[in-house]
Length: 318
Ligand SMILES: [Zn+2]
Image (cartoon, rainbow, N blue to C red):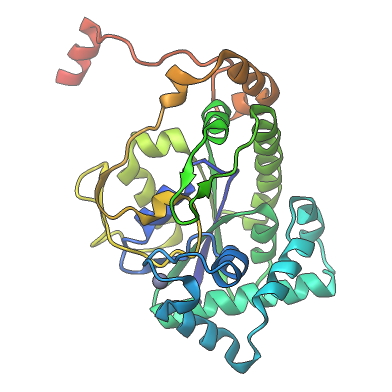
């Protein structure tokens, strides 16, 4: 049975890095944020990870042919269906049956797509980093797929900093979406709460991964995820514990980081610690309590770096 890993998270939590790394294993295919295949890929004609517009990429043409044959739904219709059934507020309802007719139709589209990707690419694991808890809830209830959930969490202050920055989107030529620290943090709470609700449906097939733990030990964390799913670690992209060799991919949408290729060292993007405005940090810290503490984040972040003491160097030499 095809394995599918759904990556759920509030945006800017490091899901694109995980997507890129996993795609470097021979048995794995990362689709990126697959939910945007329709709206951004086929309707807005945005670029696939390979550089071609999604509608012109030979791999996605094969996948769509395999999944739907002559009965391929109109991209606009699927996008509209998605907007009706897979919103955050739909999540609790999707954990119960019966589903609405629309939800059943959307679940069928998702399932056909995953299976066609498996057949066209030959991968035993398809990664979908769309991040939306409602879709993770749908996937948990598809008996024809062996579904796993990766729940990624990042320090809410780092997340708020990232959403507040003005960043140009290379494949759209426009500014990336911005949110105020309050909005980012409220969504952080809602998204993580809903993902936890969905995670109960995944039994033991779930891993929660903090961005900070990933960047501290990228290879170790990715390999334990592969072990959980039962995917071989051999011939993966790691050159050492933190450096990966990335080849071009076929991700349909996602953070601009999906276009990165070559040898890349995974490092903590901790600019927020030095650069975040006090008011922003205060807002994010106050709102995120007590969930942030539950994820082992400090109530108020202090700079973790300090000069090595004699005891520290003693420890490393031992
Ligand atoms: Zn492509």
